[in-house]
Amino acid sequence: MKMGDMMNKARWMPMLIVIVVGLVLAILILTLEKPSAMTATEGSIDSHGELAGAVQETGPRGGKLFAENGFTVELTIFEKGVPPQFRVYLYDKGKPLPPTAANVAISMTRLGAPVQFFKFSPEADYLLGDQVVEEPHSFDLAITAERNGQTFRWGYSQVEARLEMTDDTLRTIGVEILTAGPAVIHSTLKLPGEIVVNPNSVVQVVPRLPGVVAAVNFEAGQSVKKGDVMAVIESQLLADLQSQYLAAQRRLALAKTVYEREKQLWQEKISAKQDYLAAELVFSEARIASDLAAEKLRALGVRPEPGLHAKDLTRYEVRAPISGLILSKTVALGAVYKDDAPIFTVADMSTVWTAVTVYPKDLSIVRTGQKAHVKATAYDVEGDGVVTYITTLIGGQTRTATARVILDNPDGRWHPGMFVNVELISDEIEVPVAVAAQAVQTYRDWTVVFGRYGNYFEARPLELGRSDGRMVEVLKGIPAGEHYASGNSFAIKADMDKAGASHDH
Image (cartoon, rainbow, N blue to C red; front, side, top):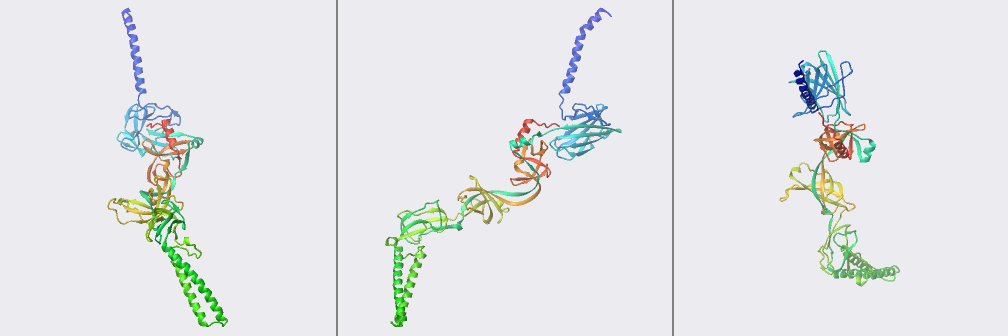
């Protein structure tokens, strides 16, 4: 070899080495930067049931590649514009094969669910699975492919929306484990309302006698008991009636004495019977006059008392006719009142009414006898009642009707003027599967509960139906008998977000 040729080769050799190294690095970088849509296990099972190597790379369709002896299966989960579905692409030594070139089947195992088997049929240039791949995509797969009389098997696992948590941790953070199952859903209609006085229990307190007010013992807003002296009026008319009664009592006592003496004399044949009969007549008339004077006092609410002093003859005590709340007071000390002027208004508050505002669109739902739950808007007060009446006319200004709900109020918790929210139970429906409303969370773009499987929680996307605020009907997503997290289930969601459970397809 000539010396010049050797020198040229020596000069070009470093450049060739740099170029080769650069090509190798470029190939490695391109290989590493390819997106991974699935994560395969460390190996696969060959046709003899032994572990065989699996290609750790992403296919041209963005799926995971499983290969053996030049035959390759690319598995993808396609969900653009359609529910998630398995699509399988076939290759022989890197070249695409028609979907009829092999038969593929997949068995899927999930937490807390039976094994799910997927069959595939040709569709365009791929094999399409016959079922939806439900969220979350957290499962173990066994993939079987048959081609030219040879069977290929691979295993694959993926974890998503899953969190491990011990029972001790659950107790610490306040998570409660419940069981999905049948429940009665109470369909409700929420309407505004106001507590009002039962007008049938309102009594106007009228003095019944004219006079001057000498004392006032109660104010509006106070409670009174039946028989309490609410006010005292000095009445001249009462003095006249009391005087008539006292005079009648004295005449009756005198007539009785004369009658008893004449009766004894007649029995002893000392006096004539005519005198005895005359005394008996006078006694009867005196008794009638006394009874009449007493009844006049009783009609005014005054108890006849023969031993009254002169200073008490004009004292008229206005007593509470019922026990209740004083709604209004018009009496003033020293004022002169007639016998037909109300001075107090008292309401029996043992029951109250709830005036419920009913909008025209809801009139067909509200009916008498309907159960209602009433809760105050500004206080921690609630109670139950039934709808007893619905107005048939709609108000001209408000364009609403009014329904009435009667509430028991033995301890006086309900006060007139309180604003309330009323839940009318429009229907009671028994559903086969329901979960507690407080257990339902939003995770990613799913509505979920977190199912409990051993020490693991996993999100279970739900399709929900009717709810009454306490229980929610489950149409799809979790079966009866499944355990799930309730109580402080938000803590599980927060920890799952921190763990960064992947959505890896």
